[in-house]
Each structure stands twice: as C-alpha cells, then as structure tokens.
Amino acid sequence: MNHTLTVLGLVALLAVLAALFGMADTGDTPAPPPTGATTPPPAKAGSDIAQVSGIRLRTQLTHPYVTTGATEAFLVVSLEALGGLPKTRLPVDLALVLDRSASMAGPRLRHAREAARQLIHSLSEHDHLAIIHYGSEAVALPSLRADAGGRAQMLAFVDAIEAEGGTHLEEALQVAAEALGSHRPALTRVLLVSDGQPTVGEVEPDALISMVEAMRRRGLTLDALGVGEDFNEELLAALARAGDGTYAYLRNEAALPQRLLQHRERASNAVAEALELTLTPAPNVELLEVLGHPLERRGPSSRLRLAGLAAGESSHLVARVRIHAEPSEDALDVAEVELEVHEAGAGRTDRTRTMLRARHTSSPPVAASHRDPALTLTVARALAAQNTARAADALASYQPSEAEASLHETRVLLDGLAASRGALPSPGADALRRLQEELRDQQAQVQAAGASGGGLEASGTVKALRLAARQGFGIQGETP
Figure 1: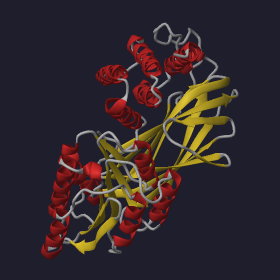
Figure 2: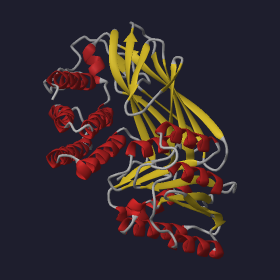
Figure 3: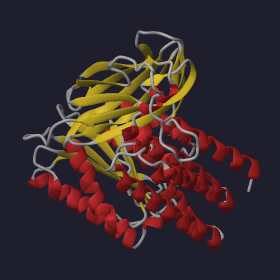
Figure 4: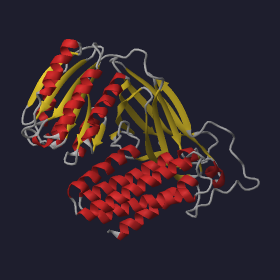
C-alpha cells in the first residue's frame, strides 16, 4: 500500500471536514459570533431555484458567507421532475436488443426470454417494439405495433431465440437503429442487455461510443443493462452515457424481467429525454471538479449531459469550487447554472438558469455559522463515492490493499461526520447510519474478493463498487 498517498488522502479528508463544518478536525461545532461582531444583513445567499418544462432546478452553496481570501466550497445542483404520473402517456417506440451469445445459454437466456415476454405484454396497442437478438450476427424483428397481431409475432420471435456464437455488438446497434420506426409523437428508446464483451466486428470502445452518439443525434436514447460478472461495465456505462440513458448492473439474471418493466415505465412516464447543464463560474471563482462527471470545457464554462428524468425522479451533482473574495457589501456572484431540457416526445428544447451568490463577512465565526448542514450528507456521499470508485479501480488491478485503503478514507470521513455534534440536521443521523452500513458492506466485499485471489467474485465486486459510486455521485437510474 502506498503509505504516503494514503496519509495525504486522510489529510485532505480532514480538511474537507473542517471546510464543511467550519471547525478544526476536533469535532467541535462552530463557535458563536464574538460579542460585538457585526452580522451581515439578511440576504438571499447560497441558493437559487428555477423551473422549466416540468423540471425544477435548485442550486445551493455549502458556504453562503465567505471571508476575505480563498474559500473552498461545494456547489450542489439538484434536478427534480415535478408532478405525479401523467393521466395519459405518450406511446413508446422501443428496440429491445438481447445478447444471445454462447455465454447466455441456460438460465440466463431463459430469464431474458421471459423478460422480453413480460415487456411485450406490458405494452399498449399504441406502442411499438422492435426486437433484435445478437450472437455472431444480429437478427431483427422490425418495429411492430403492439396490437394483438403484433404481439403474437413478437412472442413467436422471442420463443425462437437460441444461444450461439460470439458477441457482435456493433451490428446489433446498427440493426437496432434501422429497426426502430419513426412513430411520432413517441418516446424512442433502445434497451440493450448484455452479459459479455464485444468479440466480433468493431470491439474498440471509442468506436462503439461514437455509434451511440450518432444514434442519439437521431433522437434515440439508449439504456444499458449488464448481466452477470463477465461483461465490460465501463463500456456499457459509457454507451448509456453517450445515449443519454441509464446503466444498471444485475448480478442475478432472475431480476431481469422486473428491470425491463421498470425501464418501460420510465420511458412511458418521461418528462425529459435528456438534460444538459452549463456551469459558468464568476471571474473570482474556480471550478475545480464535478465529482463523478466528465466535463466538456468551453472557455470559462463547463458543460455536461445527464440522463433524462421520469415523473417523480430526481438527480443531483456536486461541484467543488474555490471562491476568491474581497471585502464587499454587495452579493458576490459565484456561478451561473444553465439547464437545457430536451422535453420528452415534444422535439422541443427549453432553458432556464440560476445565479448562485455568496455574501462577504469579516467574521470567520459568522461565516461558519451560516454553512448549510443540510447539504453535508449530499457532499459526504459524493466524496465517499470517489473513494468507492478508487477502490473499484484498485481491485480491478488486483490491488486489494489499495482498495481497502480507499474505503478507509471514507471511514475517516464518516467518523468525522458522526463526531461533529450538531453539524447534521436530525434526519441526517439515519442517513449517516445507512452510509456507514453501506461502507461496512463494501469493506466486507473487498476483503472477500481479496481473499478469493481474483476471478468472478472479484469481478462482481468491482462492478458492484462502480455502480455504488455512480449512485453516490447522484446519477439517476443507477440502481442494483
């Protein structure tokens, strides 16, 4: 284990605790303002809210009051699809893409066929479905209306699927794009199910990702479901991200029927097909990172795309910023956050924005007392997710001791939260306990995988850790 890196990681985490709670790493709560200290006048600082096309955008700052000089803080962006389920839903135009390679033989393929049957029976006569199964080559049933005749053809096609050959993912994606109809207005989505890695045709991830990006430009969204222990979860997650969809890992294929139905429900109740955020820090602010999300830098702004949301769903992201403040009686601009909503089934894009501001104070205790404890767990979960992702990478490289060290840093972080008396709101205690339980479970999995010497158990643990990290980063749709 790299002791120097571990020590530096622990020091950084303790610094984060001090920043979040405005205290030294002793666990003490912030001191009250000294007698005679000047409290800044009440002002709207540290949060803003906007709404467009059924999506609520809320931006919050952990440090709404800052002192002179540099202050590191966290910016939390929350997105929520408003309202209940629609009384009438738009029809869906789906393409189900099933891996039938030799590794799917047996119970796995039986569950996949049953999942397809249940999906077919769940459709209304206004919906359309194309079915593609692929081994060494792809075979397609073009998009059919899900009336009685169409469903009968679909069920017969599914019953004939047999496992064979390699994994020609490239052809499967091409055929899926061609097999889908152009039924508008409709919510168009590709549901990709695989238990392996591409072995036939194009196998380079970048080329496959480019294919999905081209599909997305045509209006197709892609969800990816990985089954078992052998598939390339990094590739499937990247394909889902390129397709503005969601990724799921199913260790047990028996859950596949229920999971496909959940994806159909999400498609039926979609409020937004895709979301795009642009973060533009003020000239006196540095955007250091967005935890768990790749950024596309465009001058002073940074852009990132997110999967769409169905009614009642929410997602969030956490950004780390450095604010350079000078004495001022005016509110200090921190960042503008623009949201672009690709409205589901409408072919329309709407935008809204928020402006996040902070206030300057000359009193460090006043700044500390205004820090938002309600955001603490959201930030802590994202920081823990970083360590979980590092643990997964270490275990994938057959370095279980490094994986354990990364998870130990999360323990230090959560222990610091538990020791910070009064720093958490009352509902936060239960959430903190759940985080601690998740950590203990992850530590046990890593220890078992290390003891196994690698193999399928370690591969399954890597996949579970990476999915848990994506959940911790607030990425919608990432559920086990």
